[in-house]
Length: 291
Picture 1 (cartoon, rainbow, N blue to C red):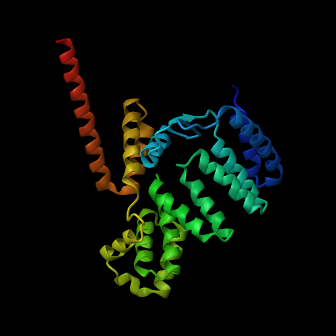
Picture 2 (picture 1 turned 90 degrees about the vertical axis):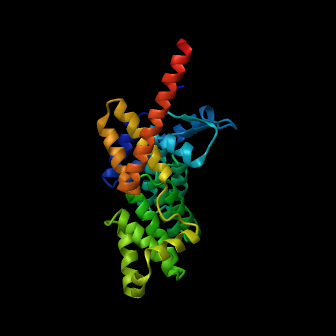
Picture 3 (picture 1 turned 60 degrees about the vertical axis):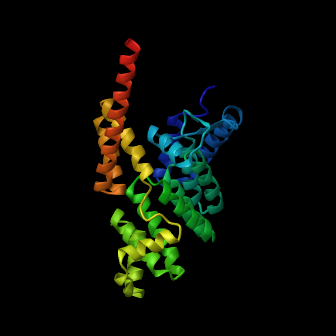
């Protein structure tokens, strides 16, 4: 079945958003949404065995499989429904329609649950609408799924603000330390650190061990998810084998920035050893077959 819209159609509407003309962009995006939803109703009906997504890369698909443990067949659609709904949400925000923006962005997350920028923006919409619990829940979900240091830092900083409001100084300080370590340009992390320094200067006396132990006690991982880094490094290896050195380098750097250079090197070594072991087993099986 023919795709419900083209990338040119979407880019045309996005051009008006880039010019801060949401009034013109919105009806264009709504037409694309209507076409998309008609297509989804007829061609993307999920079943017990199959689910449809609009992942933007092999990495996102692999990461979803490993993190979510979804056993169903994952079918990637040919058009970026997630991007359409994210654009629609942005247009609604510009027009101060925050509830409609939230609902649209929820659909963006549904179509690409691994794009953490959607989750973080959705968290802010929930917070704006007075739902702090959902803001915190979405921020927590990003810690488990973030594939870049920027998103992970923002998520930790959000949770740090929550812990600070709850007067859990150790957990708030842990979040501030991790967020600033991941991205020292994160505005939310800077705001968190400034509040801690101004209102609770004693937080500096809390040891890293104590701070991060308290964070774990609150159910928040003290570091981003290493499984995500494993997926990036596996995809980097595949990209290098295919001759795409630029993509391999990008993914390797992203993994390093997320979990640190030492952990990244250790994972690369494990992947190489695993690949070598698998290749050796295949050669052995080939020799037995020839015999």
